Image (cartoon, rainbow, N blue to C red; front, side, top):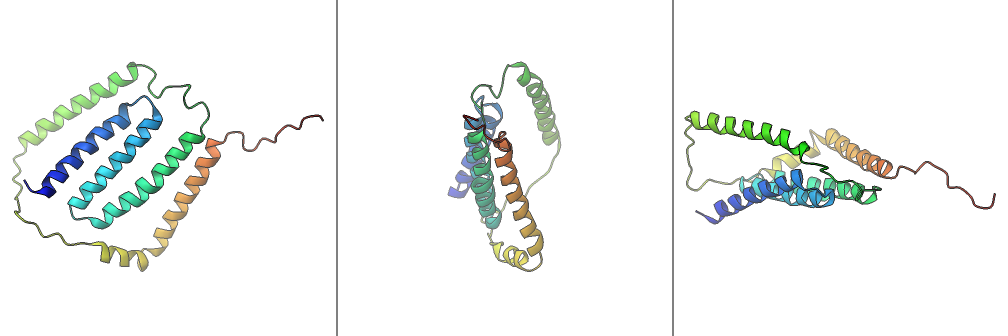
Length: 175
């Protein structure tokens, strides 16, 4: 096994473990921190696959932007520690059962499929960020800016939702 294979294996294991923490941790703040590490692990997998631009976008957009918005909304929310993310075990049993059945069916389906994947000893890794960057500047400039505006509106919406008493006028004492 080469060093890249070991890194890919560790990134995959870290992504699965932290994603399970996101799904099952009772504290929403810890789940958001686990989501950060899960997204960073996925960026590592993209980097191993040679998708350098997608890995950088994963880090900048998701880890750098979306997680900050999620943590900002969590920190500004009132009563975040009064209720638990998972109130009781009944909410876990049905999804766990359905997920387990689907997992077993997928494993059986993969075992039946006799697909031979050719293994390349030393694959050539060619960065693809140059053509993607040029497409963002020329062909997809308008949609790229549109997405940035949608993210900005989402951030403003998160602030408005996190502050429920924003529109109420404060009461003046003594009048």
